[in-house]
Image (cartoon, rainbow, N blue to C red; front, side):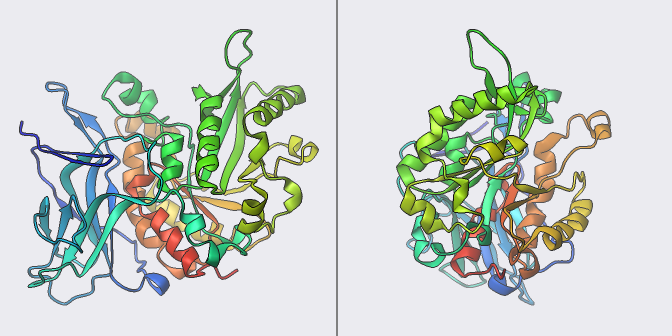
Length: 435
């Protein structure tokens, strides 16, 4: 098998043999309008992962070139191209080129992005670029890149600083702490793993990428020698909670951005109020200096938190929150518990209507949830494939005013498989929330 590597700061791309089929992005009848009525391109990562058992070659995280709203009568000669540099500066030497045959779609390339450790990022940074070229054009009609956004709130603070946080559109991750780097082993590809892990980037990477909401489930495991508090996915014990808190503290200390941390469930071991007391003391030990007080109220603005140097809004889904001013009231989840794209499309507009533009923080849980039967009938499918099913439609749905104008937080699985971070930033920059 032939391999080809491109080295740039933080980037390692591999080329492997195989096909790169063009697939259609299904908006299920919705068309981007409002802020997104023009043509738009963006880069995502394929969520599905596998391993060639004979060679050990890992597949997954292939770069995908997406285009939306290219409403032309004739697509002959139109193409999308992948670059390891900015095509606006130099449109020559694309890594790959693919013919476009419809107004909205995507192509999975043969290049993959390795899992990276973004410890040295200090500003926006592009990992891979794409350009959309019309027939006969020598320069891209549209271009974009897969970008890190460590400072996006501060970058547009002059626009959003005085807005209440509940009137911003915030990109989030569902079960943020349930992450694992796929390596083909049973730990990352066994049947339990397929239905447990929802992300591939660790917490610091998620935040540097632009995520500002973390959905967290906490388990308590009494121990006389080790850690008592762990990140869980339901009853599955994932990793020490301390590591997540350290990543959050490192990020907000470096970049002075506001992060929602939502302790939404306590599925294991919280048998008495004394356990919540112990967890609260643990949180104070690790995050006490940056926790925002609830007395700032639901109408707190970005500027209020940044000026006070209180960067973490910690929502807490237990009545214990009423006893501690550094804990905020439970954050409303718009969770449909749906296992198909069609069912989720039916549910989310209802959630937007019910929870949007109300006096609360809320998150649309824009991921698919397996039914009990899925584990039996589709044991090899798992959350990666379910994320791949829904992330492409989300790229269209949240580019329509009826969806983005009443949004607050939107949480997804395998977030690099969608464009919601860039979508949220554009909505905020253009004051697209109409509440």
